[in-house]
Every structure is written in structure tokens, then in C-alpha cells.
Image (cartoon, rainbow, N blue to C red; front, side):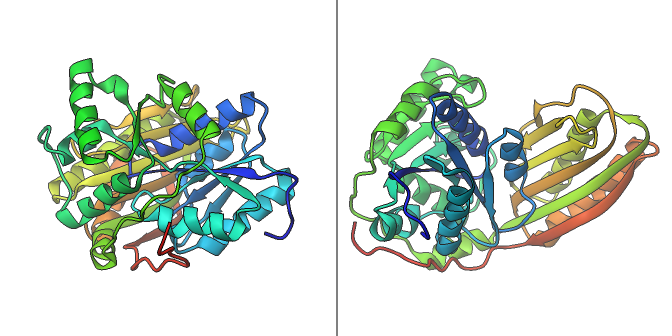
Length: 375
């Protein structure tokens, strides 16, 4: 760090697999801390550029830095630089970092090095890992449904194994008996973790988890073993696509309906190709200058696209940001999204789409900047 803050800032890392609801939880936590008088800075992270998460969190009014081109473990110096920029701008008392949803081994490659190298600057909170309950049920054999390959699931399980805190998100989707079965399974498989049950969307159960993160420091413990060859293979099986589209219509258009149609059309094409969606998320910002934003999420092939935030009025011009991660070749994702966009052109007469940014790829092998060998 280039300057010494008057007191240690808290570093809170909120991890979890793609589609677990991290960004919604981060926004909730940031508002909770801000209401208690803390200055908050946010750091988003992705393998590519043009992130939905950055758009969403910036729209919440918090200073946000984006680290693209690799996960925190491989961009450790960029993480520190991002914290430095936020410190120079607004001097946050709490940094909330949201790592890539396909990243694991964060304790050994981020939390412990941060403590060792910059321990005078940061208080390190326990690592929280969010869990989508439907995905977790399927992984742990409690229900049937679409699933990833074993190499991808290796990453998923390692994320849960290293967690200090496991947060069963979206708990309002389950009845008490079903939730109890999942909690028991997670407690059996991951006894090291403190368990919380929350709904980041509704706010249910968040207070105890947030209090825990605010009051408890991460306790060093034995580091888990990670086979980086399997880890790299699992990441390489996931295709990534980020795109930004400029939208125009001669007459006012229902932006919410446009987002839902684009999501459904993409979903149908990927499901037909046997590609399991990990997370498809989109935002639509209008050019009205009023900060209007619509957000849609799709977290499984057999899930209905969910409009979590909607536009109140129709619009004529806007920017659509799309991030998708799915198991399959990147070219397959590109073909699905392009065909879905063409379907929207047919469904909305007069609609004009300009592709401002498009990238599709598979992540390279993770090469951490640091990896502690002992706690």
C-alpha cells in the first residue's frame, strides 16, 4: 500500500459458485455497513471485462473498482492497487471483495498473503461462501436435476471446503424440512464452517451473518490441498461470454420484456445443445438519465429467468450488459447469444441492436501470485 491508513480497514471476501447470489448479498452488506456509519468500498472481479456486477453495485451508489482478466489469486497486486485507489478516493473503513464465481483456494492465495504482507493495513474477516440451495441439493445427492461435470464440481466442492462461513442463500425457496436436510448435509461434509441461512433478496436472516463478519477475525487453520491440474481443467470446461449491446427502438419499448425474451431464447439454445448454464445475468440501463436499471438472472437450465429489478417505464435507447458462464465451448455460447439476439429482432419490430463489446473465451490455468504453505 502507498499510504498508511489511520486504522486498519476490514477486508471482507464474499465467495461462492456462479449464480449463488453474491452480488445481491454484497449490496445488502454494503448498505447495512453504511447505515451503521462505515465508509464502504467494493471490489468486483472477473475473467473478462464489462461486468454486470460492476454496473449493479455502482448503481447502488458505492465506490467500486473492477479487476478483470483473472481471479484475485492471480491478480493479487491488482487487488491491492484497487484497494489503494479506493483509499485515495474515499478512505473506506470496510472493503468488500467479490471474487470470480469459479475461483477457489482463496484463503491460501488471498486472505493469508494479505494478512502476512499488509497485516498493518487490513483486518481479515472470515471467508464467506454463498450456496444456492437447489444447486447444493443436487451436488450432495439430495435431489435430481441438471448437473456439471466432475471437474467443474471439483471446484464447487473446494469452495465449500475452504469456507469459514457457509451461507445458504435463497432459503425462502425451501420449506423447513427441506432446508433442514440440506443444512445437515453441509454440516456433515464441511464441519469447519459456521452455517447461516439467509435470503439476500428479501433480507431474511442477514443480520446475524453480517454481525459475525463485523465482529470476528479469520482464524488461521490448516490449508486445504488443491490439485491445480483438476482445478484448471474444471475452469477450462466453462465457457465465458461478456457483451455490451446498444439498444434503440423507434417507438418506446418494454425493456423488461426484452431482457426476459433474450434470456429465454439463449436458455433454449444452450439447453438444446446440452450446455448447463451456471449463470446468465443481464442489466439494461436506459439513456433517460434517471438511473433506471433492469436486471435479469438465470442460474440453471431448468430455472425461469428472474427479473430481480425492473424498469418502471418504456424506453427508446439504452445499454444492455450481458455476462454468461456455462459448461461448453465459448463458441457455442456466442452462437446461442447471437441467435437469441436475432430472435429478439424478429419479436420486437423496429428494434436495433449494435454490438459494442463482445468477448467469449475459456479461462486459462490459474497461477497464483502468492500461495501460503502454512496458515
